[in-house]
Image (cartoon, rainbow, N blue to C red; front, side, top):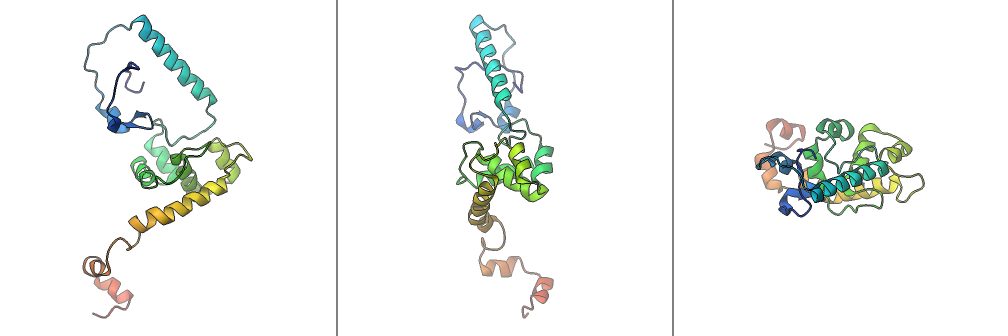
Length: 188
């Protein structure tokens, strides 16, 4: 729908262009209309109407204000809510595959809930409302927050923050400066 192109349900696509059953941002950028526009058959019209009806029904049922798994969120929304742009957020999500999707939240929304709480410091009640969680529904915001914290601490931080990813010798040769050596009282 974003490219104003109807893809027949029987069309096939390379799995590399899909993420969670929808085209990736990169794949959407590659879509070009290669055939001349044509009229739809009655069956194709029926399929399109059914697809639109399903989408409208899904939107009506959706109680989540923010869905970080959706292609509809702008890069500015990511930055404002989480402090990360879309690419950074997706990288963080890719490196944390161990985060389980919950009954009411997918993996990306669990990570987003954690980052929004850190950045904006909203109450749990407001976060429940933003992410479409019903009060007293399991898991609670605090449980999701704790799970994401543990996984980030165990999976992401050791690989991407600090100096745990390089040897002491590499650090001494490549990353130390005269000022840092003086501040840390390292003999010359």
